Image 1 (cartoon, rainbow, N blue to C red):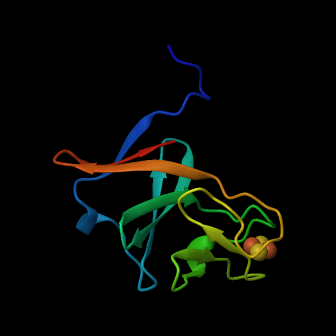
Image 2 (image 1 turned 180 degrees about the vertical axis):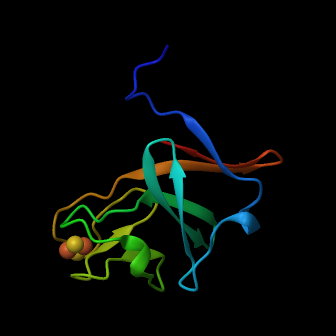
Image 3 (image 1 turned 90 degrees about the vertical axis):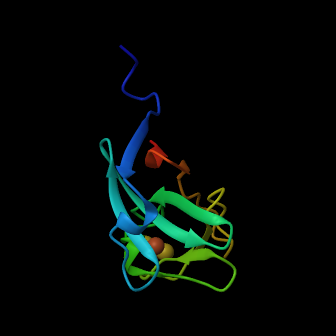
Length: 110
Ligand code: FES
């Protein structure tokens, strides 16, 4: 058996259209024990932690800016959804997850 900390692929939907999309272009899924936020992006989809690394606000209640960053609803820090870089410069890091879509569904490695 693999250690609990080893990331595993989790099937979170049969198809991207089956994700619980919100009007702000984000969906929240459970990938194993983790609550993961998925956002549409111009090059596909991105997966990242649901909770903001600053003070734990729910990023699914924020929005995606014109550059594809997620903006936290509480203090408006911005994060690159691919690598987790805190693009507004406060020095935090957002956990991001690999995501893949294939004929078998949507998978998040968490
Ligand atoms: S809780 Fe997200 S920026 Fe402060």
